[in-house]
Image (cartoon, rainbow, N blue to C red):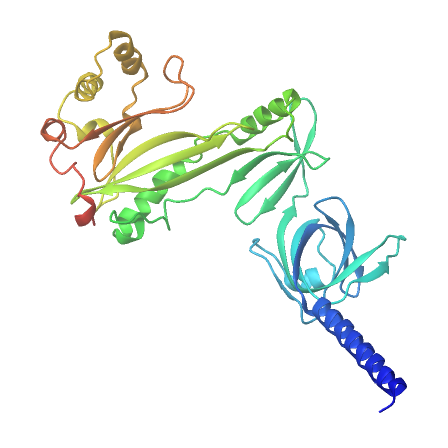
Length: 363
């Protein structure tokens, strides 16, 4: 074979290899999936949505009949979304695949366009903003598990988690609300419905905004967090104990917690006053518990006695806990917790049936 023919064959093989690599690269680009998210600015029609990404850049999302559209938001209608008929602005997280295109919308916006494999509508802007004391309007974004309050520039001030419990909350070895008789379940649910939230959401929002106005840190402002959860903590033959926990954090600070305990008759669901769980008169309860905790410093005993609230006594399978909420004691920034094991002296202080089951026998 001549040298020229060999050269032509070699060149042909190289070109074929290059074409094969190019085809492979195109195929990879067409099938590779990636996640993108942002706020839908408007529907362009024919399943095309203009979205502003989290970094502020616009892109188009192409939704076809094959795109899986879903949401955990109450009242979400996937068909209305596909047809561009949702009246409230929404936030989406999408899985896209396929070759990127360039599209120019009706208003002249030119941006990359991605075919969507899956779209989750994660948040929805509520129609009415919240007005702060100084007249500032705050947007309210509703998500499946929380609500976010944001300023017009997108700065998030406060995120409030959806309250949890007392139903559908389970603690290993303790039991749960749905294991009780229907009558007891109804009474306990009615009690907590009447109790409501142990925090003032508007007040927390005002505090978050004040903190934002004072913020001078090198890092961006971090939203305050707020949430309430109710769940069982211990149970015995006659009594089941629940705890209401309110957790909050300010920008750059650790989480703080407010705790409240309640006891209920497992058969009837009637609430048992915390003082009724003890054999001593109510006025002697704080000193006796502080004695068991070996709190001897006069100033500390005086402060704890003054701040004592029987509703802050919590029962767990292995110990009783005294909880002093943040700020209730002098110089106290966080909660103060004192644990007491169910030794003989404490057992004598509790009425019959008040001591909960140990973890391996709880029910």
